[in-house]
Image (tube, rainbow, N blue to C red):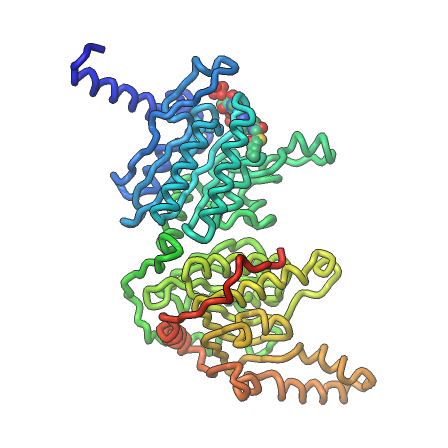
Length: 514
Ligand code: HXC
């Protein structure tokens, strides 16, 4: 290069940029496409508002010389990092580039991710990680492990301060899984992604089990079975759309309020069909999602973990343009009973909402905790306590509506007045009792064997307790409302609680039963 030749200098910059943008080269990009995956840069283009991406550390290269690595350097070193906008709001992101050294984590590559995390924390904006990597870069040994640990540490420091979202778009194995696991939401692409701590070969050697990668750690497994993933997507593009939708509900950080959408849905809208949603027979199921869709703005509800612990429904909606976090027992699945999985699923969601100023709307129809040795041996005591803890410690507005059953400990747990519910409503069909009539009568009148007498006692119990009026007389329920009015009543409650000012006693942190 000639000295003072400006044109040459510009050309050099262009050349370096071109090399970085080429990633692992044409062949590897083609291979990436053949396997149904997009490249890191294509994913970023799909994710962000057009023209908003600003790349950071584009020219970083690794510093490893073992295994002739000094002769193999690609600018960017296998991760594309930077910031941009989603619906005009700042987000930080990194996308592992599988075409460059399999997207593996080198020291230099980890430093890029760490820089993004630090910037996001300082500027108060979400961090989005697009994962597609062979894991620790073997040639770099412990430097790579150190890089992972640096990322994990920042995941924890970011937790509850800025939202963190992970998309798994390819391999994610070994300790690498723990960065996504520490983030708030995980999205997995169907067929092209997998996550596991130890892969099928190791499992075969250690436990002699035979399992495929897909069975072990594919999207369906983690969405439906393990509960590790919160969403699945049909493709890379769909995953990026889901991230955009999720971000639209969330504040940028824990000092911010969630973004408000202009409202096109009448806040006074009455839904007559809700008056007949709850079946007359208390043992008949109905779909709580019908109620949720009927009351939220424009029927738009983003359900989180829809395939996991389906006896509880969680997700985001808007009421009068403002984000709410909805938790609802689902009578259409296992009668809406609380069990280990449902408790843990909902507890994590409630804590997320509380971290980020998202008011909690809770719909209750719960016959209690699931009985059985599997639940007791599995620790339903401590897991159920998580949900109790989460609702109790939450200081955001808490609006609760009992639609039908609120039995036993589950009544207390589901954001009852006693654990800080701000507005507690019930339908006339609510049944607030220690337990169902069958169980109650068998305990109270165990010496009565005649069916006719038992039935009389059951009827008496049901007349006395299968209603919301005892609770209303005691002020445990603020108001009993007609189902058709639900939308407006919830909006009124949210307006009233909008400036709620509540803090818990000062402490280093509480001790949630983990
Ligand atoms: C260095 C790696 C690599 C790794 C893949 N590559 N994994 N390079 N370190 N860990 C390279 C390959 O050599 C190849 O380079 C390119 O990435 C693409 O890999 P392929 O094998 O050709 O791709 P594919 O057939 O799609 O298989 C992908 C794969 C496989 C399933 C991820 O590569 C694989 O099993 N890799 C090892 C995964 C692993 O065990 N990682 C360690 C996990 S433990 P070329 O130059 O040929 O294109 C871990 C610990 C983290 O990560 C601890 C945190 C605390």
